[in-house]
Image (cartoon, rainbow, N blue to C red):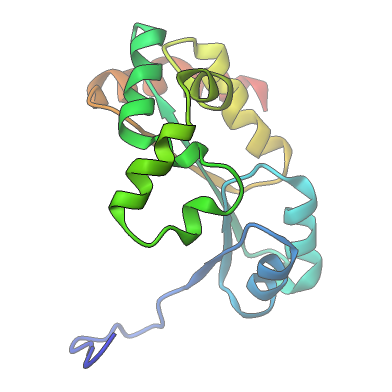
Length: 169
């Protein structure tokens, strides 16, 4: 950023959570962050964070789902809107332009989405996805709905997923 300036500062410092997906980033987060964020429900990373200095600071996870009453349509939606999430290795971090992403997304199949992303309205699948984070020691999990049916997504989570998750943990 150039010439950035914050004109209205808060009375208290804003907590800054550090994102980390591997041991080096997790170690850094434990030393300098006010919290830790990752997308893999990996208990060893949570443990590394806590032992490395994160202690009782919040550990947050993030996952993406696609709620739809038609699982196949949900898979197609994810494939159309967020195929880049399934790109192999570090490819998604090194591509320089949107055109390159469009080209690389041809590597992603609907079967890859079906195997790696919760799609549809099966409550047990949604609960299992979130339970992985709870079992790994996360304090909170952010769930991102991929697709247009936000009302259906929120209704499912409010009436079925969260009540069932509370019973499971």
